[in-house]
Each structure stands twice: as structure tokens, then as C-alpha cells.
Length: 419
Image (tube, rainbow, N blue to C red):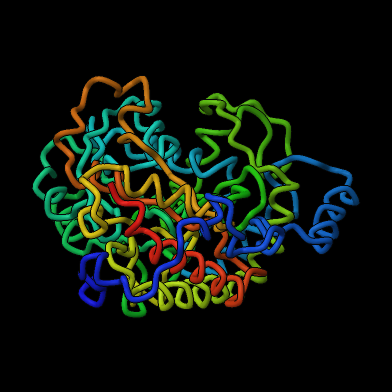
């Protein structure tokens, strides 16, 4: 995937250099003018109509609200293949899936580079996480290592798709099927993974957990979805969530519910319903922007994509990259990445760190039980990766070209900033 990326040392780029003083961090003019970038969720007045429909309905809650039902049906039609149930969040969706399969074993395989909200439900479900290192190219679970860990006692494999990447892992899925281990996919950051992305077929999964959070593609607020072909799992949603009332509207106190109250927010559902209607256009805009940005910076030394540029189904939640410090004249570790991050932010490019530690160091239930030294790829990414956040419309290719200019401006000055 990365063979097209230049591996020439930074000093080969000395043909044209900017004076360090031209960099915005040192008093120069930012490459991206203030106010030029529209932050997601890109609120517009059109969203007011969606919210007004909730007000006009006279009801601001209930799982059987017609706005929630319409959203479930619209998302099911858009994705195809799956039955859909709206819940309170992506984390709630993961928890419900794990709760459904918890009788299958005591452990869940998942990646060490992960979001705490995806891994926390493992312990909540009374299960133990078993962490697996990741591949460097896509930050997804290392499939061959995970396949070898499919021993008796594994209740499920939880695969997290980060940044919009599609973690197909066909060998892992085949191995899991051979041992009757359920497959759970956290696609909260990768909404297109719910569609036929595998040569026209759907990903082989028992259940997908999707998020409608304001930072995600549906940009709605707190909201999540369970997607599955298992109708018993759809019914299990209410057994985990609802303490009272039913989908038929009756006031019923269920004797079987765990009462987590993972009910979907109706206002969030209204915004999400609007977003689904325009989702194809949004994804195309993200992909066009990502292609423009990558085309403009792909030859910069010491810079690698943390995504597959050839994947036409990438959801492009963000634009993740990683630094190769040695190619930039820096020692191994985060110093090069941290400097570049500060320089890009000063230029007006919306770049950020994601996490700085393996997920097991964020959660009390796993902290101190695992050694980060056992996950070299995870640690390398944590030291070198960052992402461009505002890649979605209404930002367009002209905004991406401003980002490109900022990258080039910094790379041309970097030889004067190396240790």
C-alpha cells in the first residue's frame, strides 16, 4: 500500500526552502486563513426543520416514536442486508452485542489500539478483554495473531474500524467461523462498512455497532445502532435496555430487562434521519477531499498514510497519517510528530492527536494488567500518528489545497528544525 510513498531522506528536499520565520508558529502568515474551515457537524438551518418535527410531535422520547422508527427503516434501506435498532450510543450498541454473546465464553479478542468506549463494555458484560497488536497500515487488529488466539473460552472477536478504515481481515473471519466464535464489528467510525464493501458483498459479521454521535458521520448527538441479521439479537436490545414500556406503547415493567435505558434520543434521531438521506453525497465529498489531500502530500518524505488510498469504500471519518521520524532526521519516538503537529496547527490545519496510550491503560479494569512492550505496532503508531479532522463537506478541494500548502511549507522548513 505504501510503496508509492517516497523514502528519500528529508535533506533531498533542499531545492526550495522556506525561512523558519515564514512559519506561522514563528510569526509568519498561516497557510489556512482563519474561518476558512467549517468544523463538523457543519450545522445548518436545515437541521432546524428536523428538530422542529420533534417539537411538533408533542413527544420528546419513546423508543417507538415515529421519528425513531423512520430512521431505523431509512438506515436499513441505505445499508441493506441488516435489521436496525436504534439505541443510546455506539458504546451501548457494543455492550448489547457483547451481552448477547457473553455465554459463549469468558474472553473477547480486541485490539490494543482502541477507543475506551469500545472496550469498556467487555468488562461491563462480565467478560475479560484479550488484547492483540495492530497492523501498521490500517491500525486494525492483526488478523494472523488474532487467529492463533482463537482458543476455547473466546466469547467473541471485537474488531474496531478506526478513522473510517475498513478492517476486512478475511483470514480472521474464516478462522472465527471455523471455531464458531461470534464476530462483532465496531463500525462507529466507519459507516460505509455496513454496505457491500467486500467485492460487492457484505462483511462477514454477526453484528455491527454504529454511532450517531456528533463527531461521526451522522453528526446527530448521542445515538447508536445495532445492525444484525439475527432477529433474536434485535429483540435482545430491549432485554438489556428497557426498564419499562414496550415498542407497542404499553406501560410495561419487564421482569427480564437489565434496565440500562439505552433508549435513542429523539432529537438526535431527527438529525440522523436527515443525514442518512444525504449520506452518499457526504461520503463522496469526504472521499474526494481525501484523494485531493493525499495526492498533494503523498511524495513528502517521512509521511505515510494510515489508510489505504486505493480503498474506494473508506468512510473517511478523518484523515490519519503517521510520521517516520528517522526519515526526517529525528530519533524514534514522538518528538517529530509533536513538532509537526504544532507547526500544522499554527498554520490553521485542523490536526490532532487521538490517543497517547494503549487502551488498556485508560480503563481501571485493565490498567496494570498488560505491558505496552508487548504491542510494538500499537506503540509505534501512538508515537507517530496524527489526523486531519475537518475532511467533510462543506469543506471542498480548495480547502484541501490550503492544507496541502501548509504541509509543503512546513516540510520545506523542516531541515532547519531537526535536532
